[in-house]
Length: 247
Image 1: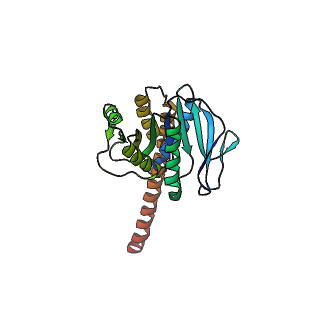
Image 2: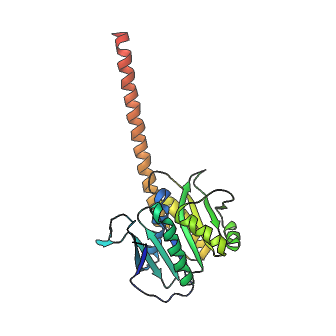
Image 3: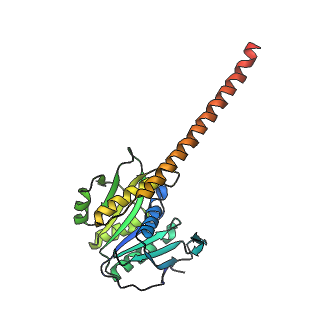
């Protein structure tokens, strides 16, 4: 079965912005997209299915939901696509084509992808690339943003950027420096702050920053316990090895 968009409502769109938040490094895309949906009080627009998607249901507020969903806000003229699973490689091209087709049909002014990238410094930079020189110029003037000059981007975002560049359609990728191995709400907060400035809308990321501090404290405690356990183990090993010498 091909990828299908199932619409549960048919709002009248003007020239919306489309935000894509799919899982990747630090789950930045999913966290930031889900946060947007909650904070902007967005309405369900529909869901996405394919036989290539994993057979799972997400549960939120006691309700089972399809894990790949679409939301809409008339106040902000915004559409958000969010997924709670990594898009299978075999579905990437078709999903990118479907999103692009949706954007063209609904006169979406730009597609913005949110994600993470491996930390290169102090986790204080959001890297960006756009198929539109005009949008790139705008991004270059936002504090904490660095435009990507050389490199590669993969998945749905990569396909959308390439298609947008060929057809002169504005597609943007915002990649916050992110931790590997666990969810990173700090990176999600970083990428949302840039999005807020790019779109001139207010997004309060306080809750994400508080969550980031809690996770950071938990990780430090785990690391300290691991170091302590390693130190105790090494001490015990040393005692065992030295024992016979002084017996």
